[in-house]
Image (cartoon, rainbow, N blue to C red):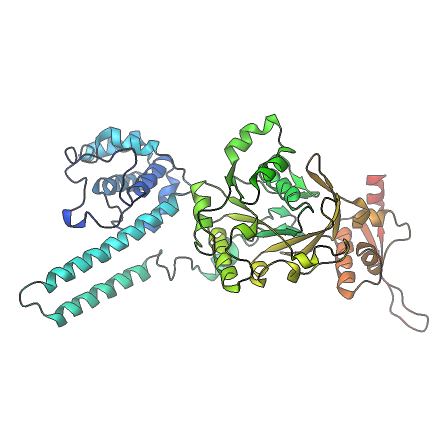
Length: 511
């Protein structure tokens, strides 16, 4: 829609409001009336939004004078801790003598009815601020053109005036909390203590995190190994329809936007396995599905992901699949551009789950063989920017597959042998690879090397495998499920490795 083309509700008529429109010489200036209406309406619905958008808007940001008047009335109410609903607002405007000039009760209530949601208010405020900055630059250019056409105009004087205005504009932008050089800057203490670095995981535990807040989760695998099956379980848990996936807790989400770009009909069919009539209200309210290609690829429009989240008030986005969101996966520069899009959304508080493919040449690797990040299709920058990467190995359609955690926010999970129930759309962990179960079934106990050999499927474990097994056992000890018998150093009679045993409490609990 062209800028300035109004949507309902209609703006105040010039016959009713003498200052409803800006001066004639600015009629073609950049503006977005719909964004102004959206912000004012959101502020009427929630006074907390005022604090969010105030620092973004700055001074004199609204194009329509009536909107500026309403905004100042909102600020006045908020400063005095009074309601900002349209009833309270019209009372204040009437006392000030401004109600008729802004379009009367009808227009104020129409603004309140334009409920785009409070989640996108900050983004709409950014649009208003950007247009205001452009209008200020345009006004300066008009003044310069007018001065240049005056009789006896002095080029040097005009140039000095323009340079002074530009310096003032630059200083204003730099001093503003919303200036592009400092908008996302924060002091060190706030960065360490207040940015959510110590927040609870979205999926998993603090010790073994699968999906950390503020970091994307990528699920990789060949077609048919259950990427979508696993992702849907996480999504439904985020919606509150379950609490755990693979026996690990999942934090709830407010609203999920699912970008079903790759075969949406199959995605719907896969979801239907877990959907019941009792889920209708939740799915209608908290799950939004975008079908087919995006308006543009994310490497070309890095703000698109954040814009989509704001437009649908979503705090979680699922990209299915990654190849459909980027022009090409193998170009490093485009991969970096995609990562910028990913980070802009994450910076806005949106959590991201990405489904992706592995390289075709590695699709037939043995199930138990541990994959590596270079087996993920595309530029290395795709995985470099991800917070967590899960890689599923197995044959297409096989219910038994292996889940590897190749990139970890904290402790590594697995490798986990898991089984898909293709009828119900569920995935369960094979208990034969659960360290707690293995230890419980070993009367003579296990060393870290013993456990490592079992977890990798036999053979001689590498040092890294042994260390991972040792961490598994240490966590069982910390949780009271195991005891530790320290080994002894080698000598003439040889050494003895540290051995772990299931605790009597654990044996009793399961026996």
